[in-house]
Length: 167
Image (cartoon, rainbow, N blue to C red; front, top):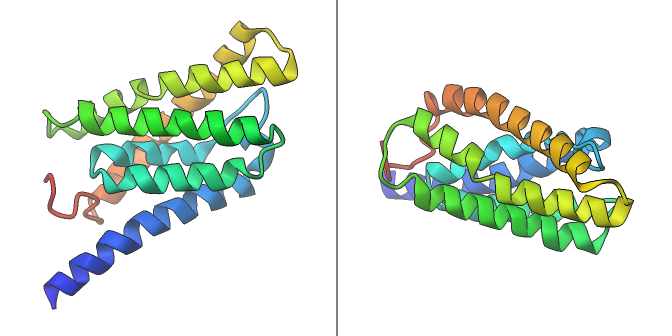
């Protein structure tokens, strides 16, 4: 019976994270897209440190959300690539530590390549200076990751995001 519960959790949790990523981003669409961007769903990027299965849910959630982006195909490709890079780097760079605080700091730093990609696409599409888009996207991303570290840490006390893989 326990094996069935674990298998169900392996499917259900990542699916819920992808769905929450989409729902939060779309409910907050006015601030989730554009030159000034605060996508609170990015907080879920911390979960890649807990288990690699969240990489897939983050990529799927980001891909679906970017289909609604006013920037079109460029955001689907570039924005999703940023999530792929950041979440994969988070997973591999947190392998050697078990301290959640380090996971959150590493995950936040791993978002920087994605921030640069998104700022580049916004500069090209909106013809806004790169430094301006970079600073606004960077601030929004770090705010999302800071809020996310607190939220994910509180949730991790009640939900086993590792599913026995790390704790």
